[in-house]
Length: 42
Image (cartoon, rainbow, N blue to C red; front, side, top):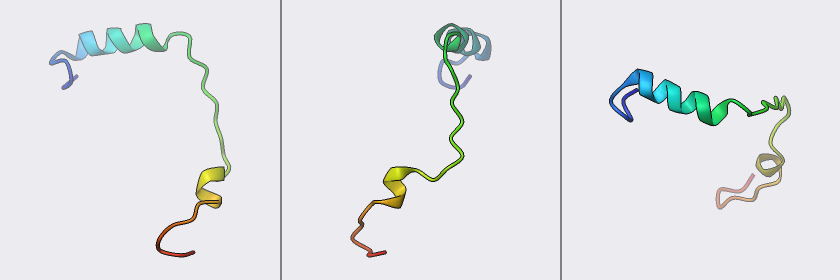
């Protein structure tokens, strides 16, 4: 609601954007996080 100044308008916009979204739950660690190399080592 803070983004647009009105919680009702923000909710309506998000509702129209997200009405056809499919949610996929991934319960495993991210492949990128498991195989990343950092400057900090392991």
